[in-house]
Length: 369
Image (tube, rainbow, N blue to C red; front, side):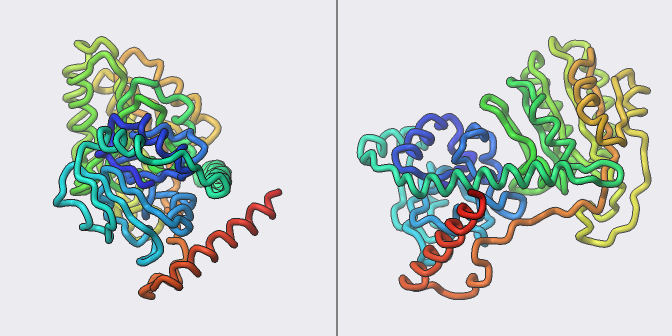
C-alpha cells in the first residue's frame, strides 16, 4: 500500500485493510503524517528521500494499492508488469497519470476504504507481512546507526533523531527545501496527531518559516517546529523572525521553535552532491536573542538532546542553530533490482523479479537469525 496526503483522516481504515490483507505500507513524502510511523509494517517514505525498506516493499510486492497519492518518484515503484494496481483518488484526472492502473476507484478515501472492507475477505498473507516487518526492523537499525555516525562537528541525522523522542504530541511541523527534507523523511518519526507541511509540489525554498507562522496564527495554543537549512534562513528566515517577535506575546503557547541546520554549503543541496563552496556564516541563534527570543547554538553531538530540551521548555519562541557536517551523504536508496529497470518486463520477467526479491529477503532473514 502506498499512502499519500489524500488519505488524511482515513488512518484507521488503512490499518484495518492492511491487517486484513497482510500488507506492508509505504507513504509518499506528503503522506508521511497520515499514519503512525511506529507501526511494525510501516516502511516509511518512498522515493529519493525515502527508506530502503520502502524500496524493498515495492520491489517484492505482487499487488499495489495507491491511496490518495500522486507520488512522482516512479523509479521506486514496482517494475512494469510486476503487480496488479488499484488506485483510489477523489480526482479521476489523477488516476493512472503516474503508473498503469488496473482498477481505478474514484471517490473519497475513507468512504472507499470502508466499502472495500465490506468486500475484502480476511486472508492475511502472514509470510509476506513477516518479511515486511523484518525489512522495517533492519531499516530502523540502519537509521539509528547512521544517526550515531560521528561527523564534523554534528551529524544532521542525529539532530532530527533526537527530536523524535521529544516531539510534542499536538505539534505542527514545517519543513523547508534542501537536504533537511532527507533527514526529516527518514529520521523524524511522526506520532499520530502531528501535522507536517512542506512545499512538495513546487519545491520552493524558504517555505518553512512562513508555513510555521501561519500554523501558529491558526492555532496559537499549540507548539510549532520549523525545520530548515541555513540557505533558507538567509533567504527569508531572518526577516520572518521579526514577524515572530512581533506576534509571540499574544500566543497562549509561545513555543515556535526554528531549527537551523547550519552546514555553510553554498550548493543548497548538501551531502557533498554538488561542489558549491562555502556560504557566509551568520549567528542565527544570536540574531534570535537580539530580537528578544531564545537562541541556542550547538556544535557538539553530546549536547544535541539537551539543546532540544532547552528550546522546547523556553518561555518564548526559540532558534536552535545546529552546526552540522556538509559532507554527510544523502544516502539515496537504490530502487529494488535497479539493474533490471531498463527492461520492459513481461509476465515471466515480473515473476522472476518477485522470486528474486523474496529469495534475497529470505537469505537476509536467515543471516539475522
